[in-house]
Image (cartoon, rainbow, N blue to C red; front, side):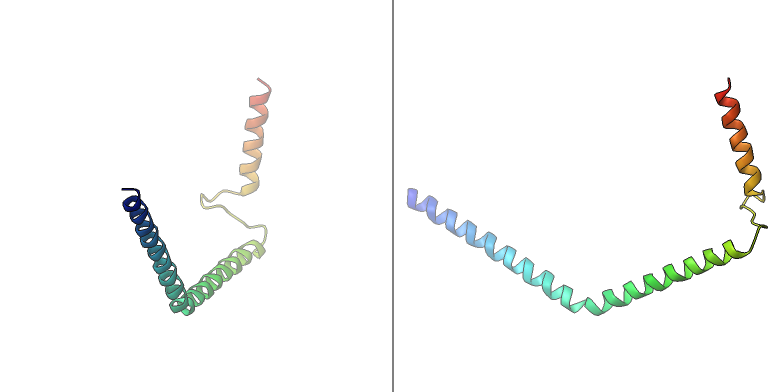
Length: 91
């Protein structure tokens, strides 16, 4: 009876070990197989980020005529917010 339990334990441990070994081999194989695709995707993402930064920097350089999406001057918005905070604190 004890030997049956020990045999079942060893068989279970071997099955789990083989499953994990197979999983490790498959993940390593897929990693090796898709390495080029991952590098290309990373390069595309870096190029897109650089283009976004370049576009953002070109907007900053355009000068003091900076206008928000709503069409208002950011300095005016800052002044209004500051006045509202000041009025709230002085209640």
